[in-house]
Image (cartoon, rainbow over all chains, first blue to last red; front, side, top):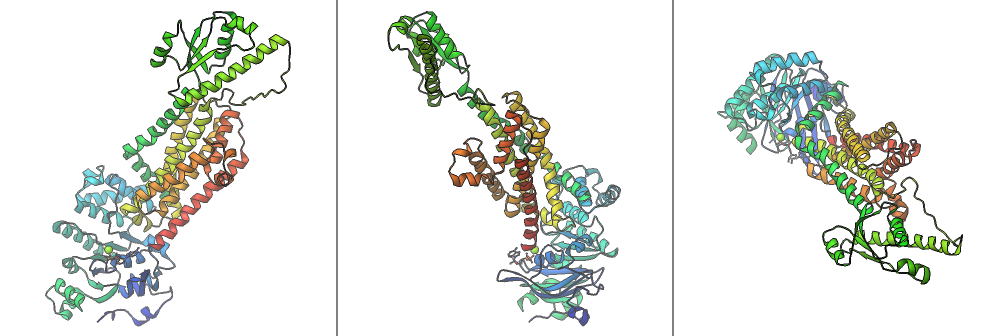
Length: 262
Length: 370
Ligand SMILES: Nc1ncnc2c1ncn2[C@@H]1O[C@H](COP(=O)(O)OP(=O)(O)O)[C@@H](O)[C@H]1O
Ligand SMILES: [Mg+2]
């Protein structure tokens, strides 16, 4: 059974297949599909993410989370369906979208042979920031993370938890309004994960939309809404509280198992 | 522009942080140059020859003078008896011995055929053959001279006068060093750039870069510029060593040569970029870069084997090898002193533009397909 719970989305928004989609949604997908050969990695998914939301994208390994995110970020062309980021079609406006989003890929994406500051300088530069902006923002970021005195140390020397937070910092260095985070906390210890999520909350409070994938079920509880992906399809989507009620689970772990089994 | 600079700067930091690669990049070409250059130099000049002159006559001294006049061989040792020959060879004092028998001068006047003996160390086959050929030529020349003296001013029926223009002593270093420069530059450039992109694809940072608004052409430029700089410094070092240490003459203009070098470097970098945008891992990229540069440059460019003597198919094939044009140009500028190569420069320019454009394009295709 597939219960794509999409009643928060106006019917017109989903029927709309041209690029003049409404901009009320940070991310909007309509039957978005991606095939690799005969294999369908993402299978007709519909979803709508509201601005400022923390949207959790749950699913086992191989469910299709990364493939979906890469399409939203303009890194992969869809095989069918359509999606909009800030009302911009991912098929036609990928280059414009790239300017407005931040992306943290599931692989570690900083350069280990560069210093902390050089990494920030690079990401600032590649987004076209001015030198003064780069200075200001990295000071702010490094102060927040307590890394100011290590700014000239090689990134390889940092513990993983710090590395991941630094990666998040550089993904939002150009102040995007939407952040796509692909398993940002995988392999990180629980305490560091907790700190990482505090950073996400702070961003969300400042109005940033956060689209985050994870396979840690406790993290799902922190999201405003979650969708559970099974084999390329969205099997359930709602707030954690509603999902627990509907699927009669004490926590998201139970809900997830029940959803996957059906 | 800011984006290209940011990328180029970052790339440059990678280069200087990776000291091991940097050392290889700068030392390896020099090692190649010295290995090739000296191996070839030894073979053809200053070959030590022992002289055992039993005759001690004006004619025998004339023979020795004639044989050593060009500098290919030098009389390194005057022997007193045959007993010294073997020990001299064993100690490496000479590679050949000239034995002039007693009564040589007298025989020259009386006998129809006069004999001298040449003993060559056969252990080093290539050298032996060279010495053999050279001494035969000396004898022929001497014979002609003697005939002229004996029967007056006689014109020999056919006389082949081969004069090697621009490389009068046939010093191979002059011929080989420009070729080595072509080989080393294309390999270094292609290897460096192919690894530079493949590494980022492998570690996943390329994905991150592609998610930013930077264009594929900007990525290519940002990647090429730092390596162009490194390769240019490298090229300058090799050229100077070739000129100062191996005495390759510089008859043309350094500026023109720098221009042609830049074109050639761009082609080589483009080649590396193309290879790396179609290979999945650093290893594959390295192998492909080596295959695409080493053998074609070595075998087809005319750097060792003259293109005129190749089978027709290979001659046609050699037209797509960039080094074919560059070897032509660098030899022309350095040895002949000709600075204008509009045809070769045009083709090299076309190749550079084509390769860089293709690699930018392939890059785009790749990122939307997997
Ligand atoms: N470039 C690709 N070529 C072929 N198959 C792919 C490619 N990328 C992903 N897949 C397949 O698509 C499925 C979903 O992968 P992915 O989106 O990475 O899942 P997740 O991120 O949820 O773990 C997997 O079975 C994976 O093997
Ligand atoms: Mg994934």
